[in-house]
Image (cartoon, rainbow, N blue to C red; front, side, top):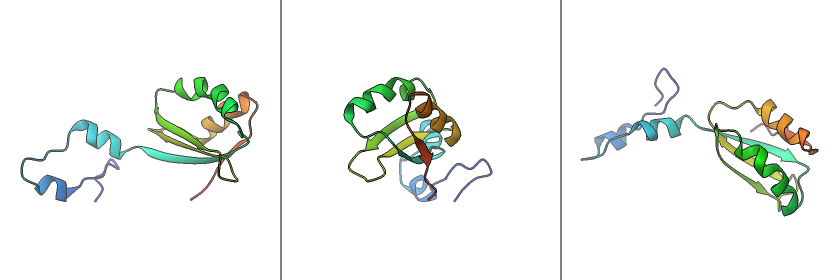
Length: 101
């Protein structure tokens, strides 16, 4: 179930004896996962973009899957534009395009 602010409310968790949803739990439910195809191919290149990604406070997690043919970048963030992520990687010289799912 979703409230009017887009936060998921887990009624079953609230029904458990002694369980409570904290504000941290609710904030995490509002996170988005963004998925991109990139031209990042090597661990050395990941080290190049690491400072860019870690400098964005709204990004709470990210990882690359270099074994995937699309060199996938997954980003967990709160209210970050996919276009912003694309431009960040492009400033470092890498192609980056959001994958629709």
